[in-house]
Amino acid sequence: MVLAIALGGLSYYLVSIWPSLFPPAVFHATAQEDCDLGRQACSALFEHGGRITLDIAPDRPVPMQPLRLWVGTAGLDGTSVKAQFRGVSMNMGQIDVMLREHKPKIYTGEVVLPVSIRDSMRWRSTIMVNSSAAMHQADFEFDIHRQ
Image (cartoon, rainbow, N blue to C red; front, side, top):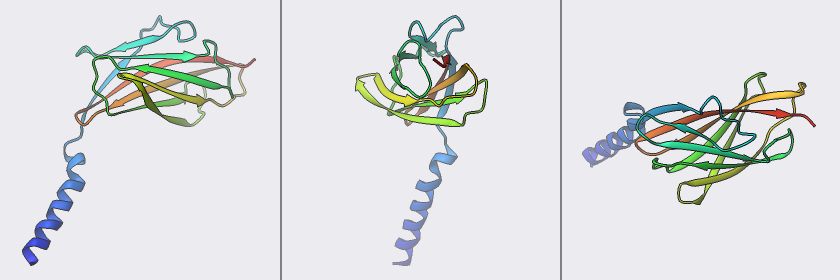
């Protein structure tokens, strides 16, 4: 009986610390410099061939209005996709949005970004595609102008 309890406790401990002992690989990419999310979808390519594509609507986003996101994950096997937003030109905190699968390899979501005291605000969106084996992160930057 004591042996069964000890083995059960050891099993529980190993299961709880396993992810910290063997974390998934993290791959990072950045969208092409010349891509303007206000005009077209942008892609970030990974060295191994995977790609994350981000498209937003409306094309010219404004603060305090819903911003619709479409994320494509070609060549990646993700179990969850999250978009994270941070101000580049001013610290506006961090906004996380879990995206839902719309079609295979296509995820959608919506975010409302806050207004800043500036007429124009630069934002960075990091798209994170998680799987049991790896995390793929892609950075995209875009501007929001007050009306």
